[in-house]
Length: 396
Image 1 (tube, rainbow, N blue to C red):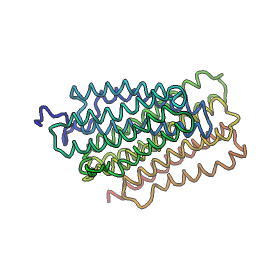
Image 2: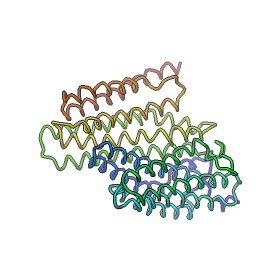
Image 3: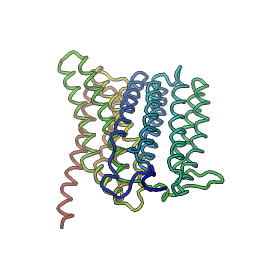
Image 4: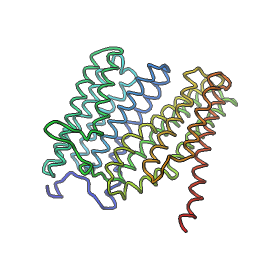
């Protein structure tokens, strides 16, 4: 296809890796989705509720990251691609609005919106790459086969209830999660290769960084809104500061050096598809999950500063723990190192060490929240100092 008619994103120029305004507009839908997820978890702090929210959170991330892959290949500044994104936004709003009742009366809406986004976007991509090299069409055809297969279980699950719906949706999500690792192998069509996933690394890194910002922003919104409704006293102000400092520490751990170093690496990599699949497609879901769970923990600490149930304790510790685990694995994959950063490993151990005493009610929720935030600040300061001290050595 001639360059003037092609809908593919350009490669190699300064602007080719930039995130467009229409992509940022599309992301606003997922601000709502993240808010819905955190509120749903807070409203049902049980094992069953956590499993349901975890499934929906991964599903939300999956539909977003797959869309980011497609806009990495296709140029959202071209009118057909832009209109396609607007169509996905409508479905995304329906998906997000159905999250609180996805396992009750709005299961059909959740599943239908999800399948429409996954299957519809892939069909659109097949149309958009017509006239391009055959391997691109074959890649999307393989993806379509997997999306249709999972879609059968999404829709079937929506017609069931209770544990049957959960089991069916879990199978559907599992199908989608394993498909990239199997290179979307389809009988008769073979499998894709990493060469078929020749992504613009700079764009992928920036897109995922922006989603992390979305999740952190939602955390700050929850903190601000909850604090505004509390009686102004020492406990409320302390809880507010703990929550804000915790969000700042998370931003620091991810963005101070890790995100930029990874951005530089994937942008200059000879094999960006592999890094985009592992580091950004899979590992970032842990980072986002940690931020969402931390938002729930911040609200708990503000509302119940003196006491935390076992579920509340687990949430307060699990949020930063999941975030640190995701960041540790992300930085490990994206750097030439034998182990993840020592600061992150120590932070993970310290967070786990807090659990026994907390479950024995030795800490109030406020104190436990303060301790987890202190661990995050320690990790951020440790890594920053270690990196600053290593720079002079590298210069010599």
